[in-house]
Length: 222
Ligand code: CTP
Ligand code: CA
Image (tube, rainbow, N blue to C red; front, side, top):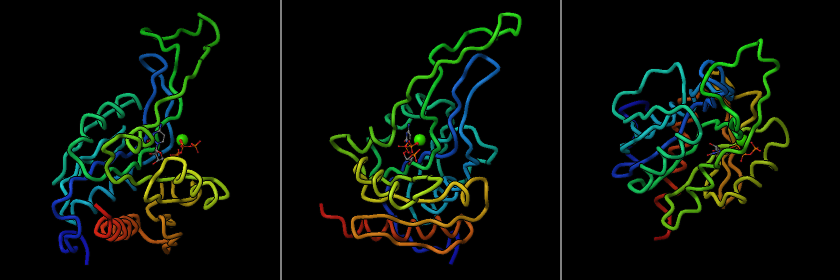
């Protein structure tokens, strides 16, 4: 069963998601960003909506239309994304971080456009806040789901990330299979171990993640 006809396993839940890349300005016409189409995050937002949740999607710049039946908040930088998340998280019981957040922002961004005759462009970077880590460490943290995009040693890196950020659920995928594609193959890591899913369209992957999430939420101790 697909779309509206999915079981309402998240009825009564409020889910907050991040999706897409972030954009970190260098000057008014330039910036640095991560490679992310937003497809996986949007698919997951739709799957949460279809499962009956009230959904808020905080999105970096993507070419995707806003899905109906949920609230989308558009942001550019990681800093803006973090502020939007912290403004919403208090009313949500689940947080799913799918965004490919830029780990660095430009420390010496300029108000005006850099001109070539001014000489070489010198870009200094400083670290961005880790939004997921910040939310997972809140005193009243929601149930936190992370994503890990790795280029090698997938399970080892992903499980370390899950323990390090103290996440009950992490979705691991290889950048080589995930990025920009319509299909994805993921492994779900939780306290019970690793659950590998077959390669399938991102919407089907999203529905499988929601089924797993709903089961974990239902068994969660108060
Ligand atoms: N994340 C976040 N804020 C950041 C960086 C990452 O919320 N500043 C979230 C992502 O949305 C994802 C998870 O953290 O759910 C893991 O992101 P990833 O880039 O794979 O891990 P990092 O912790 O940034 O480590 P690294 O890039 O060094 O592998
Ligand atoms: Ca990162």
